[in-house]
Length: 181
Image 1 (cartoon, rainbow, N blue to C red):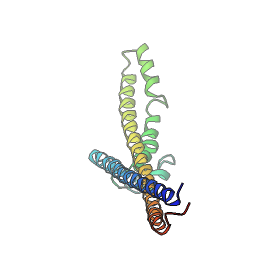
Image 2 (image 1 turned 120 degrees about the vertical axis):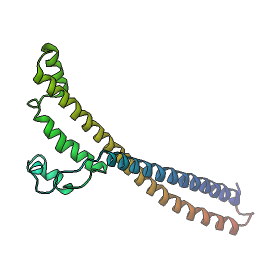
Image 3 (image 1 turned 135 degrees about the horizontal axis):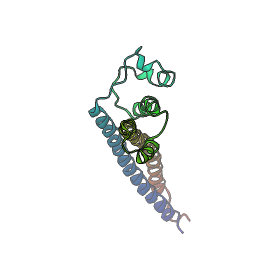
Image 4 (image 1 turned 180 degrees about the horizontal axis):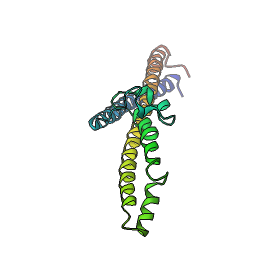
């Protein structure tokens, strides 16, 4: 095989790979932007605000160390959603029925259908666990956005490296004589 043919094949392959990496970078950048803005917009619409600094709501050792950094702020990020779900809602839900879950209270209610206390506990646990699950889903999407951001950066860097290598390949292709094998 002639050297010039090999150089052309490698350079063309580099150009294709550069194009693929640029396309991936564009797609991943758009995906990250969409995930992050969607998480922000959906959480902002809920108008959840962390308790203010120094409030009794943050006094608990199960809550304060995790939420003090967000005191008084609106809940608009995935990290805030996870903290609120795991260290505010979950703590309060554990106090509703002596630590029993919605499923446990619901099962108990099936055997005592007229128990008003169990009905109230079931409703509170259902609503709390639903909100907690929705907030944790928002957190999960924010993690997807973060991963897409990292992958986009890697794609852009690799595309830049491949572009330089492709340009060097073109330069080398022009310098090599056709007779070289």
